[in-house]
Amino acid sequence: MDDSIVRHCAEIDRCNQRGDRMLSVLDLLDAETLDLDLAAYLMARISRGASFMVGANPGGAGKTTVMCALLNFVPPELSLLAASADAVRRGSARPHCFVCHEIGSGPYFAYLWGKDLQAYCALHDSGHMLATNLHADNIEEAYEQVCLDNGVPAAHFRAFGLLIFLEVGGVYPERWRRICRVHASEGGQRHQVVFDRAEERFTPDGDAVWRAACRAFLEDQFKHGDRPIEAVRERVVEFLQTHL
Figure 1 (cartoon, one colour):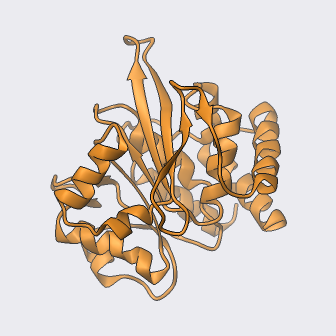
Figure 2: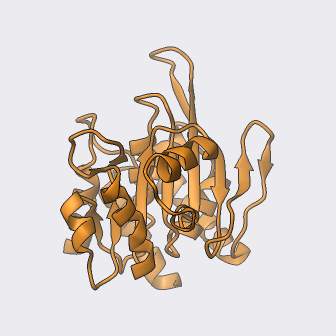
């Protein structure tokens, strides 16, 4: 396996809060956290560099798991870099995907708040891709936390091309997690709802041809592919290098 894939997956595993293996998008398809159409849309946007944020209020809702599964769609030329306070202040001359393990004030590695979160979100201006998650159930709560509580400019909030929200239901061991709503922004415009599970609404933006290619790839992998993140990342990179 290529060293870059090993490093990529090792960086994902730094987010591991459960101790078991990190789940891939194929695992999330198995669990019906999302379906093939939504997975293809997210792959199409993220593989072309869209920053994203995953939100859910309850602890254990799966926001870190979803964020990490989607990190396997990051363009091959972008290395993952943990968004520690030192790293975001230092920045990088070469584009990376900076991964904030959570927007929060706790004294944990790669948790960001206040001035550090402002510096992190400002990395958009230097051409970096960002991925993070936070305790918020909807776009209003996310905006309040990021912009009002932490002073991040609205333009930097809009630079997150995808805001992905989860809902949780059921009782252990039959607990379920679903992506319930996705808001998208293109070129720093206001976010628009592109997916709403409750309203059975899905109006994807972007390149329909590329989205269809991503769906065909994911459908084949869902039927025949191994689930671990290393195997999935290897096949995603092969696909992206062939088609992009």
